Image (tube, rainbow, N blue to C red):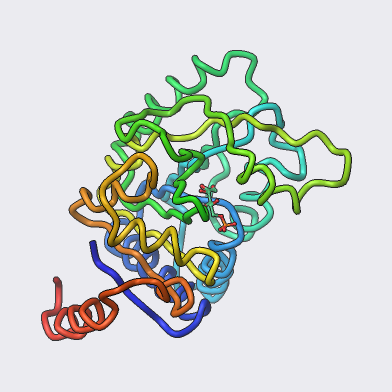
Length: 260
Ligand code: F6R
């Protein structure tokens, strides 16, 4: 795992935007894996600014989102499809037909999960997958105890995750407790993974991911097994890591070895 520690959330977002821009310049028809939540918003804003300045194009890209609430149609304000349209897609030069989010309104969730896996495969697999991380170490909606080999499927959200996401729903509004999520095995097949984490609330999960044992108890710890996973952290998210000096030393050395 590459551990990049930066001073501010803004630097984390710009680092992430640079990685996406490099990917698209190198391969304009890249297949990108995307996430929702608070963390990627600044990165998405940075990408939008680059597209609007004419520096970057998503015209040939395809995207697959990690997850969606089961029971919400894409027109629902809290659906992840709506989030992606509002926060990213409608500001880019991407063809909406080339953007995929699991179908939260499906009547046949199991078939929809299989179809999502098949669509990723048919697109040639994901080149670069963006991840956030839950306070409990979840990635996508793969909560602790998820099989580390899991595929796209229906998952029950933990009460903590439901509570953390409650802020987005009106009082008394239906809030789903089920989701469709890419599995951990699905995520691990991406050729490169970029996980962003900012804020002290993520520090314990980041520590378990980087320095804890490989364990279903912290789903993100599976990234220890990925050959090209980068964790981009601000100081607060890195604050519980024991070996910060070592990670920074490695990064300095990496900068002396272009292409590593
Ligand atoms: C969302 C997703 C989740 C979030 C995680 C962190 O698509 O996959 O795993 O990345 O819950 O969310 P924020 O960024 O809101 O802290």
